[in-house]
Length: 306
Ligand SMILES: NC(=O)c1ccc[n+]([C@@H]2O[C@H](COP(=O)([O-])OP(=O)(O)OC[C@H]3O[C@@H](n4cnc5c(N)ncnc54)[C@H](OP(=O)(O)O)[C@@H]3O)[C@@H](O)[C@H]2O)c1
Image 1 (cartoon, protein in one colour):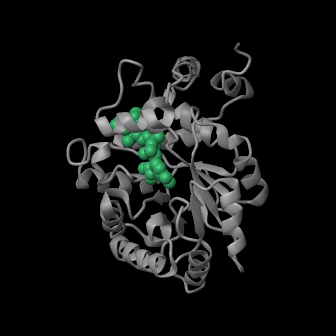
Image 2: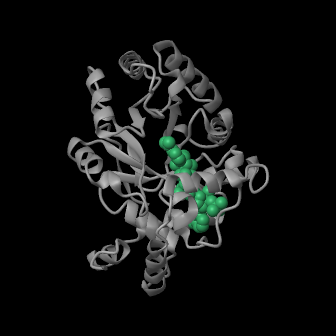
């Protein structure tokens, strides 16, 4: 596994983390395709593989994901893992955020959260009070770092301005080979400012694994609708290029591993793929070892093609 610093915090996180939206959400086939014992073994195995960064949120499975992470933590050295969770924007008031944090701590069965993130910018509540309240929580030791998620550059800078004595550690955003617009301004800016980009949906919710195609879409109407909403007309040529390189590259790699290796290719960006089985998890962890040459990057990005 490879590691890097979370923002300028001195907290060391693995380049490949573990996303846990899958744990407790019917969207991902919870209770049909995987259950609590599977989730617990995935978390334990992740830590054994050197994945020390686990991302959850109060909203995932309405608290179930956090409870599962909390259960897994009972048999893991707490200091060995970096736990990130998120507050949903309908609560981003001073009292709302403090209450949400305490509830998350209880479900996670821990005295502190390593990274506490505002899940989405709120269209209703002004951010200032919540950011300052989080800063106090940080100083009192209930959180170790403050992050945002789905914030544009402008929204992120606004959030930063409200912090008086600390800086934002990260912005968690959707970033993958089918969603590259953050490269335009957000990623270069964050790199300059020492703010970590946490890439969610690094496999484009499974689309980049090579197992789906125009006539073979993921199960579940909700997932299909969301994919349609997020990706519109999917550019399947990206998946073809991943397959082509996977077949060509020595050492045996899969399209999914190449898609992840591409996301984490530079410093300042880590990825948090979700996994529904030990097999998926092990494959994803290995992506941290893959090096991509300039020519391979060029192929994956479709550069030089008309
Ligand atoms: N901040 C936010 O707003 C936000 C939004 C979304 C997600 N997230 C976070 O980011 C994490 C990851 O994003 P995501 O879950 O949306 O998408 P993702 O990581 O791109 O895709 C995960 C899905 O891909 C499939 N998969 C994973 N590894 C695979 C492998 N090696 N081979 C084949 N298939 C594989 C699995 O689904 P199937 O087997 O069913 O295909 C898995 O559930 C989430 O768990 C969550 O923690 C955050």
